[in-house]
Length: 155
Image 1 (cartoon, rainbow, N blue to C red):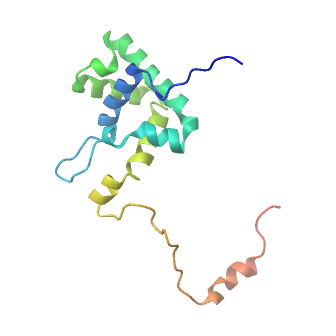
Image 2 (tube, rainbow, N blue to C red; image 1 turned 135 degrees about the horizontal axis):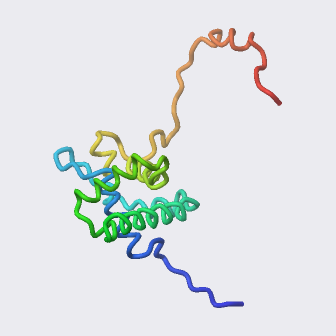
């Protein structure tokens, strides 16, 4: 059996620095409303736990962003000024249809489930209905038109 070496690091150092810069662009902190930056909610921990199959796509997107940055500016994306990072992301967003789509989607999924964000939005952290959801009893005759329609699906 071959010796297998594994690591807890999902991203290389360059990918991690690139992700941090991108996360601050996707959702910057809002001190007035008490909203953290997307960088503060540990997106990669969320992705590795909930959507592990998306890790490779995020890596590829970050590598692609760095390649474009090197081609356009001769510098890694994380080493650019914030203004240059934003300009480059806007340029790539306008020219590439699926620019960072996985990274953005997973960031939003993680961000809007984070307890700090939910609290800042005035919502109770945690599952919305941890004890279930009580449905009020109503007039079931309202379903008669649906039942009369018959089966509308294929078997």
